[in-house]
Length: 572
Image (cartoon, rainbow, N blue to C red):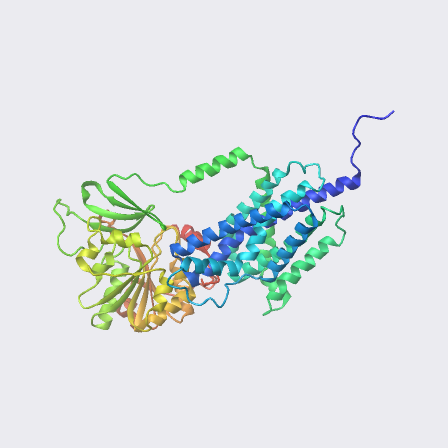
């Protein structure tokens, strides 16, 4: 008599099923982690060279999304092949060939971007630089899920639970980059870590593919092999020091990163999905809460965000806002309700008694005559009215809608009244300003740091080197770093010091917010003390040394989270 009850799986079969599940889940997790972490990594690598113009970010988005779709299509076509050996061989060869192209780098030999066909040129540069590794990763997860069905695992007929592993890897990559990777590692180190992760991924992927045909088991040598492979892929790139020195320098990171990842995974896997969805929805609602507008509001949208031109009650002021941050203001009516006549007075951050106004006057007095000035960031055009007759002021702006807004006399009259023939240099200032002649500017004003999102590539050691090259003898660089969320004065002091420049910091509140004259945080940097004129002896300007424990921002390293922490710590 035979029993109708199904026989229990053998211990060997149970062990194999557990191993298959672990390998597939971990491979999909790592693949998603690498896929989504490479996007901020590579775009940050190209930022100093290509700038942050809309064309660059639009092409980057199109490139990554198109290649992601192409990877899915490739996986779909490959899985239609009846001979199962061909997809395995093709994809493994693709992964290995892509590995040979690492670490990531910007392809050389592409020269200067063309004046026409820029988008096609960018797509080609991205494709040659990162196309193959990203394409291989994009195809990985759909192929792994299809192969999981063929393993004979009890959960094989319904592999969609593997999306959880993929989603966790994706979210972890996006969250960990600003919180862990960017503050702790240079771009070079991040690149090497990513390359090591890609190399490690090939082994479990190889196992998952081969398991389709052979029900083989990992041996006791598997984990030692992974450890050896990790060292082989990572350590040789650090050729400037010994292995022991490298481990000593990075011991905290090496211990902290895996620990944090494990904690996040544990929390993520056990969190109630409805609670997570509720928290995310609430965060999306509260992440940008605009104050109630009591006057008339006009909205201007561009690639760089949503700007509002607010007319205060009774029309006394016109205010330019980006989110909840004020970028400029103009007084339209006097207190008695009569129209303001004559040349508009610079207010908001640009009042003559504020940091920027004092710096302009100090350089003008030190030179004893008209000055030549470069201003990065147009805003409402306020600084056009800081210029005096006979002076040469050049403005650099990336957002055409800002130029249109500042030119419109119904919104702001600074340009119309003070510099009607203004022709700003359009484009990313890191690129356009570098093309200016050397040694011609008495003063360079960088006014691009009041927003929540800042152009990091304009505040690095390499960027300050460009500013210094453009300075005339005894010239100075003024960086406007008023920001509610980020402490940036110490960043400027550090990058100036690396370029053998001294820095004075101004941070005072005017106490006149009701007049739209605000507190300003400004740093002026120059080669010698005499170059800043009377500011060197002004008690409101403090000669400041760089912080010993604070790493200097470069094109290879920046730490936005650290700037946020310093602002919170200082309680400002």
